[in-house]
Length: 436
Image (cartoon, rainbow, N blue to C red; front, side, top):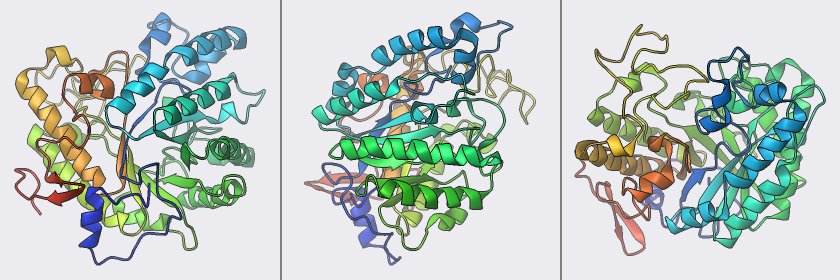
């Protein structure tokens, strides 16, 4: 996300690379022009049961399957859904939270929101009223010297079938032109807010995590083209953020569209949803992150690249992370390709609680945090998922910071491959897990 990298690790790395420059950005990213160091405000305008299980607890074990925001509102009815969500919007993100994030040395927040806030339909159970709260959060961010990205996290028909799209199940986004049209309507609604708060909102993500396995990738790129044209007439200075559609880095070149400017690629790196990462030992997690750095750095020289989601989780044990009332691969309570736990005796007990972590685990988590920050700053920066959760500490940036498990500020690194020398990073190649 940016032309932003004068202070970052990226500046030193780009200077040493012979690759062509990325597509131009006509303005620096954010107030400081530095690499992105931010968090997601997940669970606010798009419900996810694992982030706020208290909102879904009454249906645990119930015959009424409430698994996402769609079913939350469908079961409650619009009046009761409106009432509950109004209370949630007022309380989940507060000015104290934003002030805390600023005090931790971050410079951005990424704000996920669903299409239904901007392009409602009588055929959907969702409720509206999010926009005043969205603008309040943006104003708090500006007050505390943070910038914001608004992320269209869910689109009509669902772009991935995940609960975090608003509706769990099938991938129906491209099955009707109406879905695409309403998605553009939502992008334009976001653009109007971005234009209104142009000093704070510096980018718009036009769709989060479109799933290549259930969509036409050419169709996704066509949508990006349409979105680019549509919101440029409303918010000409906003940067457009596009997701990599879960394609491998070898395929990212498809998104480098000639003639675009102010466009950034978003990729997400988690270590818990696929077998090759979930079964890794601790040093392997660190080594794999160094490989991720090579991918991000390499493509950042063609198209500015940000890691829009990552966490410190090395297990999928957070309650309902894999879906409402679903278990975990880690301990074998979720059916998956290993037909059992990751290893004999693997347990989810204590995996997501800092209070249960011994000193060795805490040291690893700090190393893992710094290694990921290093990796993603070899691109254009990062957004941790999430700013807080109700119970999963390895996904809770504020709680991790309170316990010294992420550096505060993010530049205050102990295990980093980089050292801050006055205002510039210099590389040091004495890491035991990164070898370049």
